[in-house]
Length: 95
Image: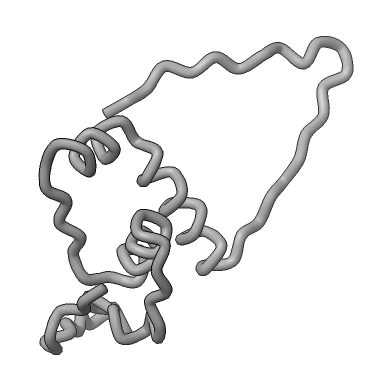
């Protein structure tokens, strides 16, 4: 799933910028992008959308349905700590 983009030429006055996002800002940006995808919009309008457990998925739920999911840490699908994986076997979140 790749979309064609056109990047305008900045000409002689080229400027470079570095943007650093923290994890929650990154997840929010991903969520805002996901809900704008044509496939997601079509599924919301005509189909079924299934959102799996995960902290980024909690942000997607918030953007998609205008709800608040707290605490997001309880939505963890799993984590890697010390090179070992851990999976959350708790009940799925409901929004």
